Amino acid sequence: VQLVESGGGLVQPGGSLRLSCAAVGTVFSIDHWAWYRQAPGKQRELVSRISSDNVINYGDSVKGRFTIDRDPAKNTTYLQMNSLKSEDTAVYYCNAGVIEPVPGIRVDGAPQFWKVEYWGQGTQVTISS
Image 1 (cartoon, rainbow, N blue to C red):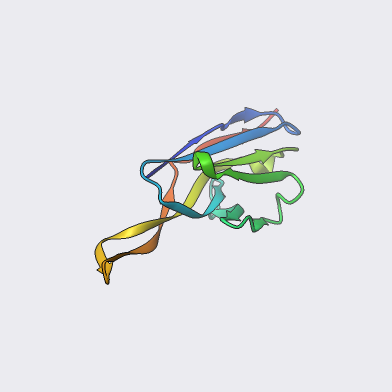
Image 2 (tube, rainbow, N blue to C red):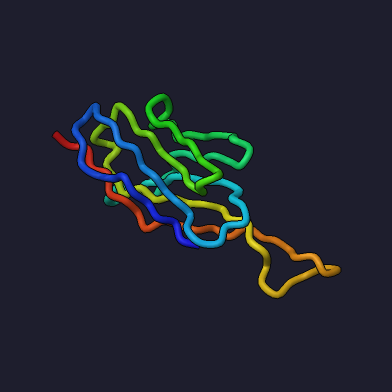
């Protein structure tokens, strides 16, 4: 499985961007999607997370401005970012917890499953006038 991100770029303060992240490959199911970001000299921080039953969390700094969504049919998540500020400038990373069969493991003939974490390559978001 690979996570392919798109949608980053340069935008003026107050503007909007929409990031997308698609899981490509053989996907059994996805437990959760999340977006993280990392600004220069800072630790990676959680931006937003959505579970398979649509429980959503946002980081305090983006509440009310960012919206996460997912399309299970397309194995894709989206991050709509509005009212962007200079402090939103960072590399944004997509994360997915993908449920996969454990290779070579069966119990009473039934496959066993585990959750594998995948990360996208990162997409640069720059907010500047």
